[in-house]
Every structure is written in C-alpha cells, then in structure tokens.
Image (cartoon, protein in one colour):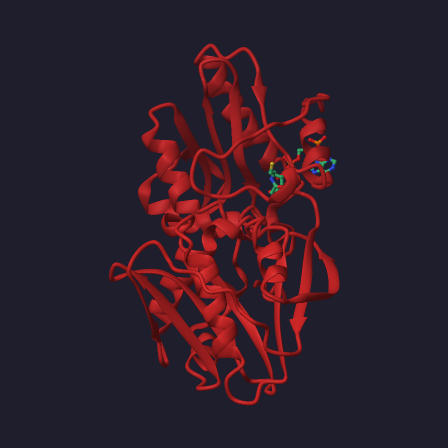
Length: 327
Ligand SMILES: CC(C)(COP(=O)(O)OP(=O)(O)OC[C@H]1O[C@@H](n2cnc3c(N)ncnc32)[C@H](O)[C@@H]1OP(=O)(O)O)[C@@H](O)C(=O)NCCC(=O)NCCS
C-alpha cells in the first residue's frame, strides 16, 4: 500500500515517537517528544502530518506559523524508506498547508553538522541563509555556562583532594535535615536525579536499565544522602566508595527551587566531612561546563584541585550518553 499522508491522531503517538527516535531526532534530552506533541497541537496553530504505511508511521512533519513566518519541525522519514521521494512529499504537503494559510515564507532550523538534512532541503528548494540564531530559555533550564553555544564541546574538569580540608561552617537559612536513603528504589532515585539534574543536562544515569541502576544505588558502598528543607527534598549527594580508599562525589546538587538559600555550601561541607570518614585516602569529583557556573569555583574553594580536563561532545550530540559522568 502506498504511504498515506494524513493528520496525526492520538493513537499515532508511540509510532511517531519511535520514528523520531529512529531518525535521531531525540538526541537532546531536553526535548520531551510527548510534551512537544501536546504543546504543538494545543497551541491552536500547530499541526502534525504523518505518513502511514500498513499501520506504521513512516514519515512526519510538524508545522505552524507564528503570525509572520511558517516553521517546520520534526521532519523525518523511516530510515528504510529514504531517497524514495517520501521526504519531498511530506514537505510539499506541509508547505501547501502553510500556503493555504497565507504564509509567505517557511523557515526551519537544522543543526549545521547535519549535512544529510541540509543536502535534502537544498535539493527540494531551500536555501541556507546567513543568519545568527539567538535564543533565550524562558523556563528554568540553565543555558551552558559562559554563553557557549549548545554545539560547543563540553569540558569536564576532574578534581581531587588527598587530605581532609578544614571545611568552613555554613548555616543554612532554613531548617534542614539530612537523611541517608539506604538502598532507595529506582523510582525515588529517578525523582531525585531529575529534580536536581534536569537543568544541568544530567543524562548518564537515564541510560541505565532499572537493574543496572538498582545494582549501583543499592550497593552498600554507594551512599546517597538526601537534604530536606522544611521537610521537603531539596537536594542530594552521592558518595561512591566502590574504589576505596578513593571516594568519589558522584553526584551533588540542590533542586532549582532551593538554590540561593546557602544550602549548597552547607551540603558540600557535609559531603566532604562524610567522605573522609572510614580511612579515605583520596576524594574526587568532576564538574563540567554544563553545570552551574558556581560549581567549579565552589569545589576549589573547598579544597579540591583540578588534575585533569577532557573535552567531550555534549550529550545531545552523542548517541550514547552513558559515558558521561556528571559531578
Ligand atoms: C532528511 C530526510 C527527511 C529526507 O527524507 P527522504 O525520504 O530521504 O527524502 P526524499 O527521498 O524525498 O528526497 C528528496 C530529494 O532530496 C535528495 N536527498 C535526500 N537526502 C539527501 C542528501 N543527504 N543530500 C542530497 N540530496 C538528498 C533525494 O535524492 C531527492 O532528490 P530527487 O527528488 O532529485 O531524487 C530523512 O533523511 C530523515 O528523516 N533524516 C533524519 C531526520 C532529520 O535529520 N530531519 C531533519 C531535521 S531538521
């Protein structure tokens, strides 16, 4: 049966997301496909066209206009049906719909490293215009430090301390309690990890299966301490003693709502005190240019010294995010 182009229906959701995954459109962990679909359709001026073949979604385009220009996103065809005219067909359909709405010009964004897509768009009549794309997030997601573009490499700094430092005492501004989460469930851990790490692109632990994750977080040599502020979870840190006598501060962070209440310095001081219990010889941490800009100077102020630096592609340019450890 030929591919039928039609409007998206709710029942297409999993097939559409599977297509986007197969077409490598979901590499940026900040793009949540379900949210994107809902936001587009609820906006009142967005549409999604899908191509269906024998009950499978094999092509897609999301389109809409902002009152000035038309925009097309999430263009994909099934990897096994490429160079067969399907991309051109769905783009023509999207353009026809925009034209019917009186839109004079359509624009789209392509990562400049995606030569394959640029070649395709040029072949079907698009031109590359010399423009700088400027952007600013309006949600609580932080942009990479120092104005780095999101295509820059990420620099990871590895730090260590080889003796217990004298830790400055910091009094938090709100009543707090620190509780060890012994052998936490993976669901609780995911909550903590996302709540703290989402603004900073923490993704590596998301690549773990439930079994892999449980094997780490329920290991008694891995200590997870949850900070509560006024009874509410506000941050956590994770001490990994599996390479004892070296201890690693595998994760450390405060949830966005609690940043600025002096909880970070308090929590780091406490993590350092605890890390040095039990015959520790070396304490390590790493931080990268996607982390809060204050993280690196704070680690240094507390006695960590950089010993290595590595450049890696950002998580959304790496298919495999699992090699990416965050501090
Ligand atoms: C980009 C994409 C949608 C193209 O789909 P497709 O089904 O292969 O496209 P078509 O077969 O309709 O190609 C249309 C024309 O472009 C040409 N073309 C396709 N890919 C090309 C490429 N990489 N370089 C040059 N020309 C290309 C085709 O040969 C065809 O030319 P013709 O009509 O003269 O024969 C598909 O490769 C894809 O899903 N890629 C991954 C997702 C992606 O990167 N999307 C864009 C995000 S902005």
